[in-house]
Image (spheres, rainbow, N blue to C red):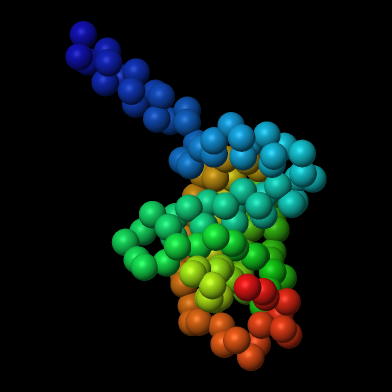
Amino acid sequence: MIRTLTLSSQMLLVALPAFAVDARIARQLEKLDPNTRLEQACDTEAMNRISADKSDFKPDKVIAYTFAEPVLEGDSIAAPGAVFRSRGEWYRLSYTCTTGPKRINVRSLDYEIGKLVPHSAWREHYLYD
């Protein structure tokens, strides 16, 4: 019996996406065009992962295109010029992300947090409080 449960658990893990979004967010993402959906799903996952990591960051916004245009290829996005806002300050962010074919559930996300964006650069890059 235990062996059957173990096999079933392994099969379930293979079938599920790595990072499933909740139903409310999924419904909102479904309303977007596929490229925007991919970007928003990955932005949301980046925000969630940064929040969950053992850091003092509490992000409430991620923008993929602030310092460089993201590169989309299939169900993946590379956003080397992204930013995120935490506690009223903006920080540089670079991430790569892959979703499933519906571009909703994130399958992989790698990110690197960069330096604080000085307030003097906010206006030029359309950042806000």
